[in-house]
Length: 183
Image 1 (cartoon, rainbow, N blue to C red):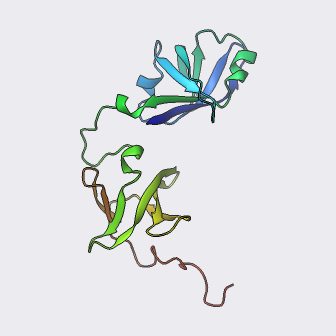
Image 2 (image 1 turned 120 degrees about the horizontal axis):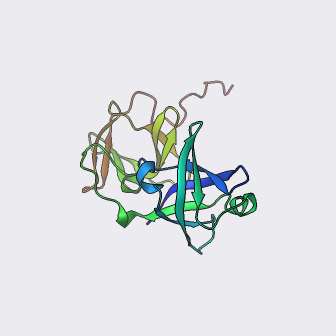
Image 3 (image 1 turned 30 degrees about the horizontal axis):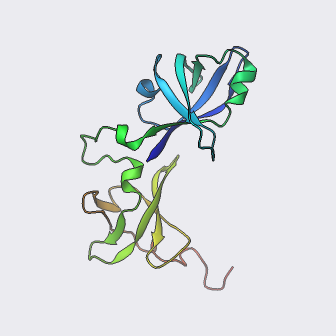
């Protein structure tokens, strides 16, 4: 499975540097000088390789210079490029409470009493923290957002394919937040 570890946001300056939106917990390893990156444009199948020539932090953003990209025009051509890795390349985590997004996607979500809630379709990363996007059991569309916090997600078993939750009152109510008179 292909996992995105970064995306080219834009060019920076006139010497071919690019601004990368980092989507990995290990940017120092993934984008180290000499690292070979695989990348492609969204919705394209052709994968190109790029070697990191220089990497630096600039105002909280990662700037890269890649071999063969020496001016603004070449850097602009990379805008939107997704840097990817194969999930098989990832080392398993030593922490039993740490998971890769792709390990959670597809797991069954249940209550402590075994009642099926749905299936994790995506892990969303927001400023407030991680959310599990859950497709309700028996539904073909829509989502239920479950905060991925210990108070709500009581256990995760990748081996058994189960996420157990103890939701606060109203979280599973599809009409939660709607007023009785429809206003």
